[in-house]
Amino acid sequence: MSEKRTKKRTVATFGKYFTAPSLKDARKRRKDEDSEIIRDSFEVPEDMVNAGIGRKYYIRTYGCQMNEHDTEVMAGIFELLGYEKTELTAEADIILLNTCAVRDTAENKVFGELGHLKYLKASRPDLLLGVCGCMSQEEEVVDTILRKHQHVDMIFGTHNIHRLPQLIKEAYMNKEMVVEVWSQEGDIIENLPKTRLGDLKAWVNITYGCDKFCTYCIIPYTRGKERSRLPEDILAEVEELAQKGYQEITLLGQNVNSYGNDLNGGVYGFANLLEAVQKIAIPRVRFTTSHPWEFTDEMIKIISKGGNMMPHVHLPVQSGSSAILRKMGRLYTREEYLTLYNKIRKNIPNVSITTDIIVGFPNETAEQFEETASLVEQCAFDGAYTFIYSQRDGTPAAKLNDNVPIQEKKQRLQTLNALVNEAALKRNGHFLGEVVEVLVHGESKKNAAVLSGYTPQNKLVNFVGGKDLIGKRLEVKVIQVKNWTLDGEVHNG
Ligand code: 5AD
Ligand code: SF4
Image 1 (spheres, rainbow, N blue to C red):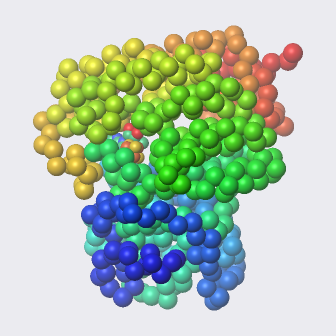
Image 2: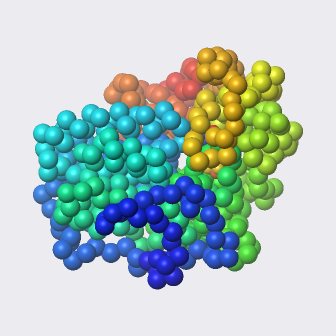
Image 3: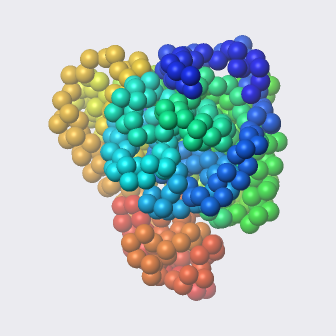
């Protein structure tokens, strides 16, 4: 870590080993400085080399793909130290909960799990238990863990992952809980190891953080300022994955559209990156997530050329009411969203479009909810993740009084889900009798005799087939459609 950053970082200190989070500091953005790309800040202390030999690690991941990606980095670090992966908490020497803060339901799950792990920790005092990820960035969460979950050995933040070897060392040496959460980070660390969770599909991070500050959302605070990796680093990673035989990559960012805004005055943007990735011999390329703001015509043009660009766009709308969108700070109106939506549908052949929707934003009226319902009917999305608004302390929306009772919000969610399912079923109906290309990723979760894979449009297809088909891209005929999945059979000629 550069000297400059170390001095500038604002941290609250409440003990010898501790740096605590501050959402207030996390909100600050240093516009005057570009991100630094750091290639040497990850290091293993000499006495930690081989520290994990004969020991096992277990990581439980909550939340989004960004967390899955971070888990791969932490797994890489553990394995570099000699630790072996286990799927069983009972045989782990170190357990990490990689947490999500986006809604209170996600946070409650983690607190529930911490409660369960108390018993395991009591029976095995030498077990190390750590909490990391987005929840660690919230001071209230850290306070709660310090007060109520003293069996936790370490808490570290999303900007402290590269310090895992040092943190493990401190946790082994100290009886007190080790807390290290930096609230601001502006750098990108390129020399981190990574153990990918699969050998077929891979995440490729292109940006970190978010500067959109939608009023309901905690992510700009927990993940820090928006910063882009250099194109050459991203392209080298994709090339390497292609050479290793990976079939699919997903370019990851909180808002991939804004890729490059912070590099060289924004001359090389997401469309340029897509164009470059399109030339690499990797069969499938996806990207997520796209804010409807900054979704450019150039992007549409490149995706519509096909090749390895998969025809699927995840385009969160959040609400169908322009008044609510304004209160959410989403930067577009209902009409502007619809214009973009229709443009994407018209120009990208056979595209599927999915979305995220929040119901029950503070003071959302019945009429405003109806506008969301009518937008869903009008768009007929291929799928939607729907959520009840969850108040996140420290965000602007948390200061609003809310006159919508929770029962009403639940009712709205049900109404919305029925419309979402109806639309998805209708869209899936277009595939009935069609032959689709499926990238087979494994056995279905429910039945080992059934294989599962995704179509280019990201539709999950289940079909009967032998294990030898796993990892292949093959033609499957769709014989039945459901709300969220398709049933098929292997197509022979
Ligand atoms: N309450 C409910 N849903 C939220 N999301 C983000 N913040 C909140 C919140 N406070 C949803 C948005 C976003 C998705 C990842 O999570 O729909 O697109
Ligand atoms: Fe949150 Fe908005 Fe950023 Fe998405 S774009 S991560 S919803 S602040």
